[in-house]
Amino acid sequence: MPAEPGLSEIVTTTIENRTGKIQDNVTNHNALSVVLKDHDMIEKNVSGRSLLEEMSFDDNGTFTRYSGAQTLNISYNPVATAAEFVPKQFAVAVVLNGREKRMNDGMEGKIKLAKMRMTVAEDTLQNFFNADCYSDGTADSGLQIGGLRLLISKTPTSGTIGGIDRSVAANAFYRNFKFDTVNDWAGGVVSAATVKTLFGRVIDNTQQNANGPKVILSGRTHYGAVRDAAQAVQMITDPKLAKLGFENLFFCGRTVILGSSINFGGQTLIADDLSYFIDPKSIALKTYRGAYFERLDQIQSINQDAEAQLIIFMGNLTLNRARTNGVLFDS
Image (cartoon, rainbow, N blue to C red; front, side, top):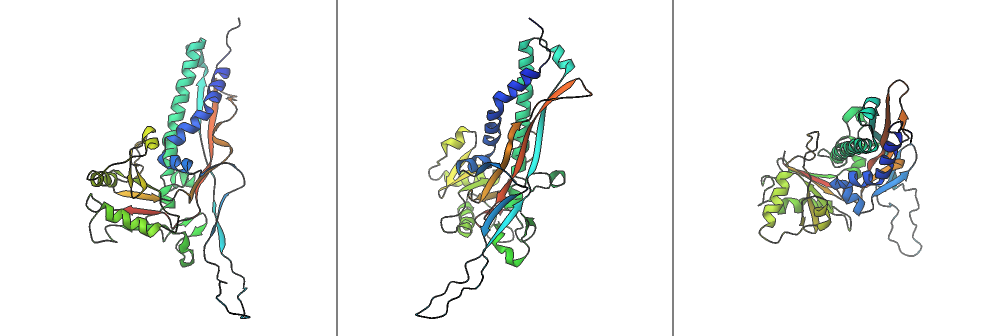
């Protein structure tokens, strides 16, 4: 039997067999993506040079109450626009060089090495994707996904999202609600004594008919306040989220998730004294065909004794309705 010439087949089949698992592992590692998945807001296989979110920005101004042959208003009345989001890309490479191949000679050694590298690649994707989903999208000169700090901003009257300048008064429809306990309220910061009032205040200001926040992602201090306040009554959790490892509670029919865990790189995802109130029907994770944590063909270096296989992502988070989302913070 001829000797195995290298790791090409082992690496390729290992990644191929785990491609679906990579997708599940990465998205299930992230509280926001789990919520979007549960609400069917992960859209795969999109195409086009950008990601569009069409939305209405005003009532139809031709509404007229009339009697008999009274003249009606049939003037042109634009009521729709679109936000345009730039797709973002990232990749991780599983690389093996000739030295490693020969030092792990034998089928068992090769399989173990390939699996170990795949595990590290998956963990890396999980950690960076997790961080990006909570980011402001400014890392690497704006190549980063625009996350919650961008879409649900602490300063909603400034900045541009999807090409829409929120500092313009006419674009107020694309501003989320923000509540700063230090400057917008005189009753103190979030605590077990105040959390019901403050969370209720944000919910009241983001509910729009049947639309509104269904999930609250909280930092440690805010989540602790909800937990302490709930201990006086009955604490209920979402078993699905608990099974995936997310600590959670219910508040006024909404799931509150502890979202401030740190990742391998040490980044704090959500500040301890901050909570995002999320309308999952307003936010989507849109990804391009063949680029949802999927592998490319194996690459053999032309000037190195090494081979690599890339796992890639191309897409972005998008926002179609801002005012049903809110952020509460103490500093």
